[in-house]
Amino acid sequence: MKLIYLINIQGGIFVNKDIIQKEKPHKSSNIKKVIGIVSGKGGVGKSLTTSMLAVTMNRLGYSTAILDADVTGPSIPKVFGITEKAMGTDLGIIPTKSETGIGMMSVNLLLKRDTDPVLWRGPIVTGTVKQFWTEVMWGDIDFMFIDMPPGTGEVALTVFQSIPVDGIIVVTSPQELVSMIVAKAVNMAEMMNIPILGLIENMSYFQCDDCGKKHHIFGESHIDDIANAHKLEVLGKLPIMPNIAKLCDNGRIEDFNGTWLEDTAKLLEKMLVK
Ligand SMILES: Nc1ncnc2c1ncn2[C@@H]1O[C@H](COP(=O)(O)OP(=O)(O)OP(=O)(O)O)[C@@H](O)[C@H]1O
Image (cartoon, rainbow, N blue to C red; front, side, top):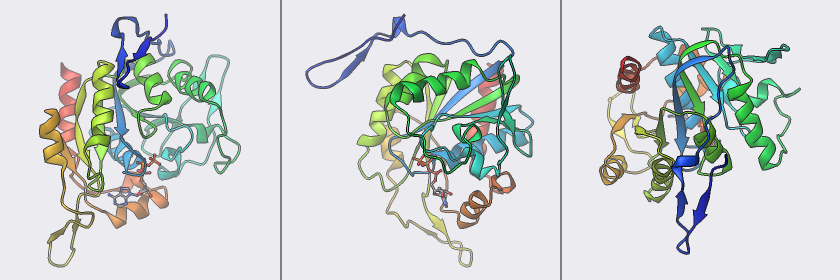
């Protein structure tokens, strides 16, 4: 069966939720919770947040994986310093493991060179994301994080339609002065019946090492207003972290220090015991 959505004359999209067909993961996969990390627009730090959340849950002892659904702009292997390619067998694709044991699959683990552009038409891109769910032998996973492409396009629709996502976290940044962009992501999730766990504001402020004062480099935060408007929780505010940007560039994200995501981790842990 297919997902049917109708566009009304005002441009709103109505999704018939009763006929959304979820795909089954590979038979060797046992994935307890799937968390989508989304953003209304590009470059707000979605991949960084995905990576830090995966590292945080892995450090807490949970079996953790990342499915990189950002097919045309994959950055997950790079921030984890993974250069070897993914292997396959007759049974399925084997996810690559990071140094600390986080399983991952990304287009960049399949391309010959990680600088090769992905010049694929939409159906191939969406088919690839589905394959990452159905043909990768993930094994036993407590938390799978999906790094979604920015915005509310075809891949996001495919993920929400075909993968049983337990909840999404929306990453935003203070530059998004208009809450409209966040609202689009939130509205899409609501239409697709996907629970929204909350918002994370990235690059929220810069804290001076010398005086400890917080400077709002990109302007005052609007995240609390946006959260109130949508009756959502603010799960965390990440500062501008030049040292963490350097860790990403060096493929060492697993070495980060910081407690900004503790509340989010607690929320995720609670999902597992429900
Ligand atoms: N809080 C931060 N402090 C310092 N650097 C950051 C921060 N957040 C993100 N960056 C840097 O900004 C760049 C973009 O971040 P990232 O790739 O996570 O964004 P994205 O939203 O996933 O982008 P895309 O839309 O292209 O997928 C990266 O180089 C990352 O290291």
